[in-house]
Every structure is written in C-alpha cells, then in structure tokens.
Image (cartoon, rainbow, N blue to C red; front, side):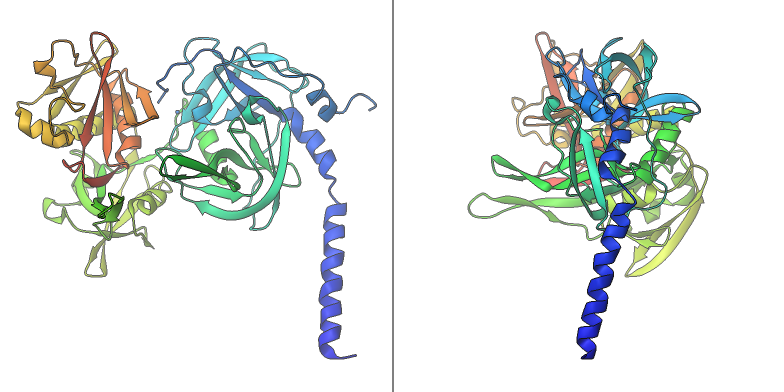
Length: 497
C-alpha cells in the first residue's frame, strides 16, 4: 500500500476515534441538567435613566420550561448565574443589567421553578461590566444550584454553550458554538478588555448569563453581541458574541466580595493621551484619523506615584511599552495597566526615536480619595472649573476664565448650541446631577452624589475624548461637554490611571 494512503488512513482513523471517545465521556444533556438550576433571570422593577457607578422526578430542564415567565412589570431584564463563596450563594450578572435600578427591592431574580427572590447589589465594576448580587428575601431555595468558574485557559475551537433569557421571553435558552477568539478588546465606554469571542449566539436578555464548556464550568460571562453600525442602520453579527473570560471574571468577583464591593486596582496618577483628527472628504464623509502614532505622556496628577517618577520635561514623550510589552494605542495601554496589582512596580517605557527608556516606580491602590483627586484634576485642568462637595451633591465653580475661552474648551461655536454659561443663565444650576457620555440616542451617564462618583464617571468617559455632565434647569436638564483637546474636530482620547 502506498505510504500516503497509509498515512491518510492512520490520520483519518485517529480523528474518527478521538471524537467519539471524547464525547462518550460527557453527556451534554446531562451536563445541562446540572447547570440550568444555577441560572437565573434578573429583573429590574424600578429604574432610572442614570446608572450606579459598578430520581424519577421531573428533570430540571422540564421544570424550566413548564410555565411562561411573566416579566410584564419589569422595566428591564437580563440573565445571571449562582456561585458559592464561603458557603454563601451570590448571583453574578452584568453591571449594565442592574446599574439603572433604584430603590430597595427593585432587583429580583427568578429561579428555575420561577420562585422570586429579592436581591441587593454587593458591588460591581462598570469597566468590566460585572455585578455581584446577594439574596435578601427569601434565602435561596433548594432548587437553586451553583456552578464554578473554570480554572485554566479555554482553547480556540472548544465547544461552548450560552445559557440565558433572550429578549426576556425565552428563559433557559441554550445555544452552542465554539471559541473563535481570545483576549478581545471591545469598543464602547465599558467592557473593553479580556473578552472571549464565541459563535454561541446571544442577544438582549442573555447579558450576564454563563458561557459554559462541555463539563458545565463557566468560561465566560456573556456580555455583548457584535453590532456593525453603518450610517443610520445597525447590523447584528450573530457569529460574533463576547463574554468576559473566566480568569478575569473570577478575580473581579473575588475582589468585589472581599473588598467592600470594589475591585482592587493600581493607581499611578498617570495621564496618557492619543489624538485623532476629524478628516472629511468632498462628499462630507468623515473619519477619525490617527494623529499620534503612540500614546503620549500628557501629565500626572499632583501627589501621585507618577508625579514623583516623571519630570515636567518628559511631558509630551511617546509611550511605547508598559512592563516590557509593546503598545500601539490607548486601548493596549489600558489592557496592560489593568494587569498591574496595587503596590506592585510598573515600568513605563518612553519611546525616544524607537529606543525604549524605562521609568519604573511603585503603584498605590486606587482609593475613593484618589478618584476624587482625579476628578478635581480633570475638571480644573481641562474645564477650568473647581469642584465642591456638600451634603451629597457636587457643584462646579468656574475659575475666572472668560466666556470665549470656555466656549473653545467645550467646542461650542455659539451660546445657543448646547452650552449656556452658568453665571449668565439664572435657570441653570451648578449641581452636577450625572456625568458620562451623551451622544445622540446613546446615553451612558452615572448618578453623581460625590466627587468620587465623578471620578469614576470621568475615568470611564475619558477614553472617548470628552466627558459630558448634566446640570439642572428650571424645567429640564442641560448637558455640558468638556473636549479634552479644546477642539471638537480633534478627539484626544485620555487614559487616567
């Protein structure tokens, strides 16, 4: 027999044998029977437009589909799953599912037999889009099971299953697919780093549900679906689905549970930027064109670790590496800094004509005081405003900058276009109600009750090149904007870390 035929038969036989042997060890229906009782529907009964800154018995599958889940009184809904930490059950979901909830008792979950449980938020992280909930009343019943985050990395091509309640109408829907990509960076204001790409279809309502492997271990938290916007239309990409990978998610969840609801982050006091200009052709088609090839050291917050490590004459230098890893843009810089733990050393590589000059210093932990300092610095440095906090409100006071300069800072050509100076408008207050991003119908703003809250919202918004803040008027609200570049035709993405 020719050699190539022998080889073909050997390889083909090995492939055929490996698939049945692997699959024979695991029954997918049996695995799902064990996983489904750990999945819940998360419903929000009271919400606001602003968000918070974070044996022979019936099988479980049969119970899940016996009745129609009535969510007619819910303002919004998503999915979640139950884990155990120290003998206590918690529900894991996406921050965007619950961050609009207001008032006690506004968050409930429904288990596999449609029992209703009132929940409260332990804490969350808007950057990674993760929230942790705990049971308030009643305590979890026997029908609720738990599942575990997978230890070890998932591989490209692995089979995975997405479980959730798409559209809030089809609870315990299961879709399957494969892992098609790892460590994806996503655009948008939140959920940027550390995502798995899979072909297991998810859609609205699946958010917060588990992505599990063939053994029923959680490999990711379903977060987003791929959407391509073209002119006035948005096209859903059903084969592009993104889930926060288990390794990152497990660390975030552990931090939230053990650190008073917050994720432990390093604080450098570093300000990096990267600018893009708005280039338009003859027909009015405009795109943002890269102006800076690399992120630029733009400043450092007074009193921070970075302020002691860098000198003023280094401002304006390109940054080409972080901890020895080459970076090309703000998003990659953010991804590397997110891996730095509080109290660890960090190496920032300044790029001088292609030669990396390292600057190494020790980080601190990001605290509420650091966040307040960050907000104070940003609003004064880029908006010419002073912040004061009184009785659960944050007020702005201008620092004597004249109207023309302020309008240039806000990128406004005339007083009638979205900007009314506070001192000239008796019906506009100076209390910041919310801050974030307001672009057309895309409103992502966080309620502001402290300067620390403003720091959180500013960090999240800054990478878009501006921050919007909302002031009260006699009859409505007024949205103000700080363009970090001082020019609305230049997008200066800012990384405040």
